[in-house]
Length: 415
Image 1 (cartoon, helix red, strand yellow):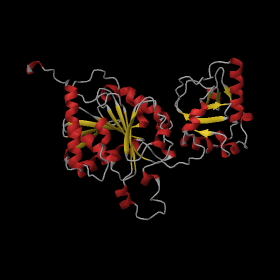
Image 2: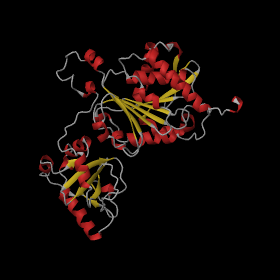
Image 3: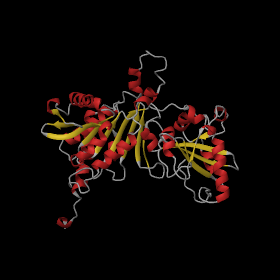
């Protein structure tokens, strides 16, 4: 009867072998006092496309995750990676990182690692086999001409995706989306391919909330509440996309790194692995429920980079502000270029220097720390006469008595 037993699909067999290989690699080459690359346990979940590791510095996440993925490819598994940098000037630095990994981890022979340059990326070889490429966000628009080649490099690794505010590119989210669209063209991959569709792994330290990608995925509330030293998969009802997130603090290595050069190094985010934020006027769960208990209203203001969503309940005098990366529509805009039919341009009469006191008194609640910082630290936004805008929107809807009035009947909210 055994000859009639159904065999597992070849891809599933390869994935199971790969998981065993990762487990062996972890035990042999990943020291227990460093990041244990647990996100890779979920790598072959077809419903997860985003993997995010945020931790304290010296946790070893970049070294270990990239090293394990390189080893998968070097071992002969059908998987290739695409390591992306923020700027093209960093490509060679990332190859140096790969060389350091091959030198430090005994699985590899550093003499087997080599690189070949092209206009828009570096091709990484281990022996005679291509295992990955190194490219950058700057040249995403040029990479579309290489989409047939890039289709094989389905695992995208964005190392140091969190940076200083001045280092972020304003188009990072749209550029990354374009990159994925360029490589998501191989709809019938070889049956031995470990991945059927592109996946993205983000590696970074808890530097700040200013990443355009955090806004794009609406991650702020999740990051504030995520328990340190845990991994959790957030589903589509919690975030716009399904994301496997881990946040780690490496206390043992912090003790070695923090040698007393600076007085606050023990408590900065590089050591704690957690973002620093002030909880004053941040909305709580009670407030979230209260705003939708009865008729509530909401509208969007188009800013330069993002949208400011305002959700309010006039009866309860609750006003919740939230920065959004995307929105279906907007009623107001701050830039002339965004004016269209039915949209009100916010001219000078919509601003006043005395508006800051309303934020200080706690009139407005902020959906998350990023929203609070973004609105209150930018002069144009903190000076907006938000109550005037709320009044305009409220009167419009009283007349129409439709569209934006939301009833508290099985209402789903992403606040």
